[in-house]
Image 1 (cartoon, rainbow, N blue to C red):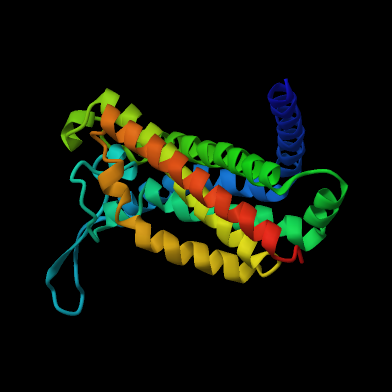
Image 2 (cartoon, one colour):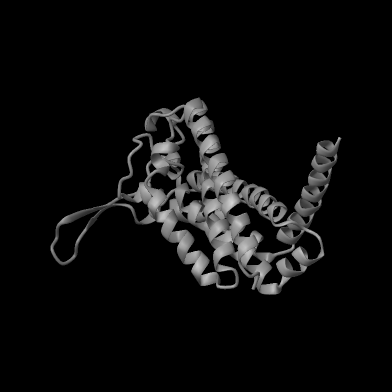
Length: 265
């Protein structure tokens, strides 16, 4: 009976915390800026590279130079090789969003500390574990929205640039693209968890949490093509869901300890 009461109390607290966090997030201009950037970024990349790409002649040497560009819209989503390369299509694709997600997490959590919201919150009612869990869920939803809008923007940009939409040309399939996007969305949970933990360390020192999140993100960046290739399957989805859940659970516990053991200012 006591266990049922505790579970009921936890569910009520979490529901309340989620309502507050979603309301706070959707009243911040930052979320709309991030969503707008996610939509506009692939359009700009695909359209601009289609204008400047191709073969040009160097006026000084007279030699022909080839400027790399996108030939297929799905290159903006990923590759099938599984290995990280340093060409344009590998560096300027949807994987850039992971860094944008990390920055947004730091901005959102940092605002809580800067405004004194967390101090008032924990003084009045909420437990720190509820706060961490709610933030993880809310920020994961926000990151999923950013990836969906990037995908939409890539379709728009590809249409404007006149790129090919043939999935077989990049060694993928429609099912593989769907699995790829699902994998990428859940892999974002890893970046959300890392940035959330570093945001609880940095607190009001926003520069510290952002720099730390980007530094750790750079270490993981080369793993993304291997975990979420264009020809993803059920195994990739399961791996990303499991990995994201493990990171969220483990680093969520770390964030809870940090909030319990350190000052909230």
